[in-house]
Image 1 (cartoon, one colour):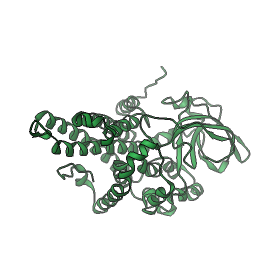
Image 2 (tube, one colour):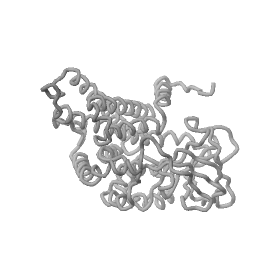
Image 3 (cartoon, helix red, strand yellow):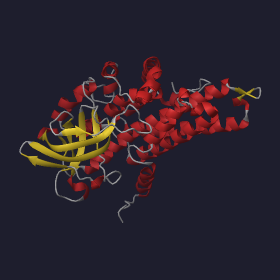
Image 4 (cartoon, helix red, strand yellow):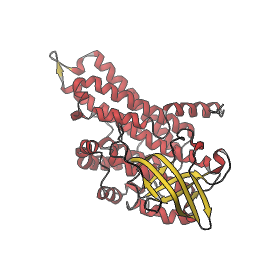
Length: 397
């Protein structure tokens, strides 16, 4: 539940309908009973979510929340997926990851831009939990400057031959399929860029060693190498020239990213609220000191402000995509809230905040990861200014 130690339910309680509240309560119960007790172990062991747990999430209908009913999903608005995602992520980001990928990640690219045949063929296994699709965009020399990517796809008859290297792919080496963005022609800039779905077991696909990241432990990340990988032409999801569609997909994914950050911030706030009410120093509860009260108030404001912006963006999206401006504003606010609130939580916990036992340090590590994934805070601010002013800023100038 998105509640503090006092039991108050702030902004979320004013906008959710009965079905959404029931969904939130069901997911919160499953997350607390099944995933919260294992979160620290999974983080310590850098263990990805076991396959049987992914199937359980599928059985609960959580992997198909935003997928249309004709493809096996429930066709709910994106807000419903974010509600479920937050409750899972408050227990463990590893447990939330399949829902993130299915409801706000690359599966939505197929749902938004794929052909009818592709949607029918590819979305069912995601909804059932048989397959997870990871997105692969970044390269060693192409991060924020995505149009600098050099991975290529050459059409030969009814196949696309893929060559290149991808980096920072979350899910690499663990997901069954990859939505790979690449250059499909000799045209410059984004005009050549499209996306194909590649099977992780296809001949010519290999993976580098798993990255040992500061956070995101258990969410696999590795380089992917493509050496004359032959992909069926029927797996071309976004043809050359469809680079602008990538930003629509990014806008949906950024709502998922913002929700993962919101979960970090809310969890850090909830744990801190309990701690300052229980912990005593100099004969008083820690919460009785005005400096602590001010810090708690600042944390509450950051969390609830981020939630308001996220929910507003999600409500504007409905079952589709939010505006680029709303998505970037929500992501920026939630990323900054997670960093600020988790840092404050460490301070208010004192030495305990620095201990793995209290898991505040894990939240702080993950907070910084979400602020990098899906476009850094600086990139978001450039995007916000560009959308608000109606001016396209050339970063190469």
